Image (tube, rainbow, N blue to C red; front, side):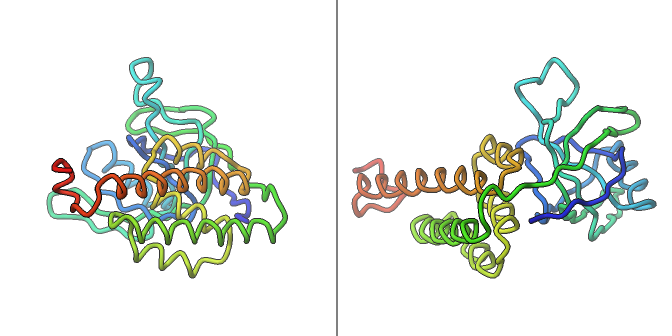
Length: 225
């Protein structure tokens, strides 16, 4: 279980499309906009912390870059500045947070946050069982779908903590951004497992059906079936 992390009340924030940033996740970013260059300079000169929120398209047009209410705060672990003024950095997720208020958008966005702490939702043994079940589903999907990262599923086998497992798996292996945001927003760890496992079973069934209809044809010749 993630422990409560003491974070500043107000942190800088990026709002990115199709993004849900989880605790423990490693997110590479390319910083090129002037506002984010300034943000990065300030962050590196202080605590190296900032929030990354997904862009809520349902509110687009009514607010400038509307963020989802639940986001992630991370710490810059590595940063390389390029000759043209841009930077490449790696940020590691620390905590789920609720964005309580947008304090300012100038010169870059800063938000007031509240740290969120997960609840197990089930006994430890049950969540470990769900962890093993999800691992099996991921291995099966990897076997059926070449697009799933085999190296990542192998790495996940070394992660014993159920919450860390499901968060890293969701961040890296859940292609549905709507579901990914829902998983980020779900504080009940057991429920998080249930939601992700349901999606994986559906994905696996779809792949099996497609293979059956495809017959022996390779993917690039399926139209000839």
